[in-house]
Length: 216
Image (cartoon, rainbow, N blue to C red; front, side):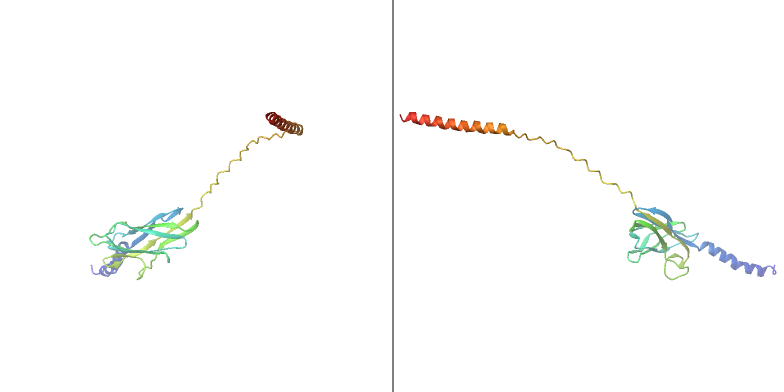
């Protein structure tokens, strides 16, 4: 019995650390992790407690502000949201969510972020700001302890190039028939002129005859 005691004492810490590693290994993920986008799209921030009981999450997300614009943060299932900030200049999103009455023990949606592309083509990452055991960046709280161990971001392909529809063809011009103007021949013009001249002479002579008859 005594001979086995040191072995048991030695194995106890190993069992404890193995148990602690399995429990306190929370994970933050972004879904979907890959996607081809042409317009506005949504990304979901998730927390997986990995068996622990989570009371709060600080999710700090980084994106490229020259390629994407974050437009909206929607709440997930947490009871309270202390912070939902978007810095469009630096491309940093800060989300702080916590529960006051119940603890989170299953994979849960922290928040949903809406983006829209600012370029027509290219790839761009969206990831967490995180340092294992660090004081800044993303955290997952359980009983006052940060249990976040891993983060998983995503890479997105922007492709907004669309086929350009040519403008409708201009209909062909409709030809309007032109009615030719018939110019009288020279001979006819001269005959008409002589007729008018003779008519004028006859009118003059007739008028003179009437005048003479009245004064006789």
